[in-house]
Structures are given as structure tokens and as C-alpha cells.
Image (cartoon, rainbow, N blue to C red; front, side, top):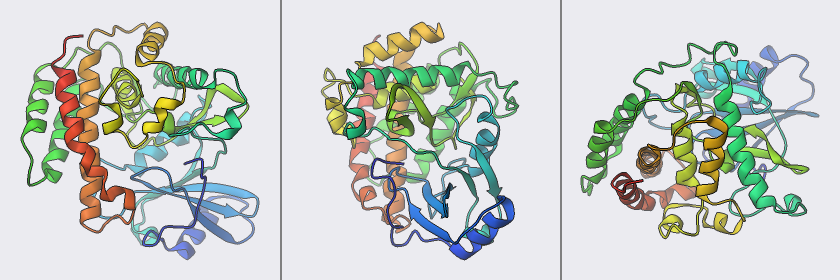
Length: 353
């Protein structure tokens, strides 16, 4: 989802639209008119398409082409979450139908409601500039949305079986270590393994069990142009589980721009975020601490984990491009960020808070 909104489907990322049309008409009531398809050009992994039937619009999500890392791009999980969570929070779009018949489009996919709004990436959308202090207001709204998600009761949402909270952080380290082993470059210097060993040896004690999104950041949220104080939607729920909510805060801090961080511009694809007028990292941490009542004593561990995990992710994306499984030109250079992210993870992990 992006401010560009939709575009023509990228060459090489077309699906069997006739089969998808048949499936949609069988599983979603009262579809009229012929199917029109466009693609959401934002995002870097899952493929997301707009399905339009006259005035009705839906979103189809499926994994990227090629080899998929174990447990990644879980459309069944994302459907399960969104088919229930929308009843309990405005932040979750409604999912309508899930398909695991690979003959339809080559992979699991699901269809959900399409929401309109703006997403903040490297530039402030024109429609939001009319608001005073809009950067600060949007920044705090991102934190507030995260705290709201973490406050939901999994039992009340019929999602108490979504994950196994006990040992969550340790399993995260082990799982991402395995993923790294599958994409480790030939010129690997061993730092990522060294970080993994230290992370595993210093896993924090969990403070609370909550829904965790696992990729919360400003451009995975959508805003109404008239309301910069509240996020309208959160996207990309395929890694959602039950675990320690500090993992989401660590992810958010890792992505968050801060003029006091000399390494930020080298590790992001969106250096323009520094010009958005967002609150500082210290301010968003303080906001979350106040709302969640959680201790921030182990924050550096969670932030270091986020840098380390993101290094694995960008290496996966670049590897997929090298194999010819991705046609997205952004993936040709994304791997250059990997060593910088690893170095930042080590620096953060070995710096006392």
C-alpha cells in the first residue's frame, strides 16, 4: 500500500486472473461487473493486488514467487487473524476468503476488504500537510496503535491458539538463525552468527503475553487524511502471533528515524523520514512505556534483535532477486544494507542502556 496507491501489475507478477475471478465469485456474495486488476507497488515481499468489481474493491494477498523461508509469508495465519480481529479493533481490515488450492494462483492467498487512506513513507502526503504539527501527531498515533493492539485480549478475540508465548524470544532467535543459514552469502564474515549466539545467551524475561505484529512501522499503517491522531489500519499481519510485545517496540525503534543516530541513513530505504518532523526515538519509547506500563530495561536487546532480523530479511529479498524469483528492481540493491544492519545490531547489543 503506498501513496502512489495502485499501478499496473509488474511484468512477471501476473496471476491467473480468470481462476481468481471464478474463486472470488464463488466465495464473496453479490459481486457484479467484470474483474479489473491493479497492483499495490509498495511493500517488498508479499504480492498485493487490487481486485475491482464495479464499485466494489478488494485486496488479494499472496506470497512472493520462488523459495519461501520456513514459516514466512503465512497467508493462512494472516487470514485467521483478520477474519476475527476486525470485530475487536478498527485497526484490522476484514478478511473474507482464504484459498489453499495452489491451482488457482500457485500459492495460498486470501481476499480482504480494501481500505482507502494514505501511508507515510519518505515524504509527508500533501493531504496531511494542512494539519499543525502533523509529524509529531502521526508519530504518536503509530505508538498508540501499537499499544492498542497489545492491549487486546486474545481469548476474547478467539485467537488464544495463535501462538505459544512461553519461550517466544528464544524461538525467534533460533528461527531467524535458521533462515540466515539458508541465505548466508559466500563472503559472510561470521558477525551474524556471533550476534545470534549473544542474543540467545541473553534472552530477556518476558513481561507480558500479547498479540505481536512482528513488523510494526509507520508505512505498515494507514491514515485518514482528516485524522492524523489515529491510525486507520495496520497492514501485513502474516507474522502475527502471541508473544512478548517488546518485540514490536524494538522493531519500531529500529525503523524510527532519529537525527542523533549517525547510522540511520545508511540502513534505511527511506532516509526522507528524517524530514517528517516525527517525535524522537526517546519520545516514542517514553510514550509506549507510559501506555503499556512495561519496563524498558531490556530495550537494547529487542532493538538489536530487530536490526539483526532485518539483516536476514534484506538478505532473503536480495537472494530471491539473484535467483530470478523477484522482478522488483529495488531488490537488486537491498542486500547492500545487510552488513550495515549487522554492525548496528552488534553495536546496540554491546552498548549498556
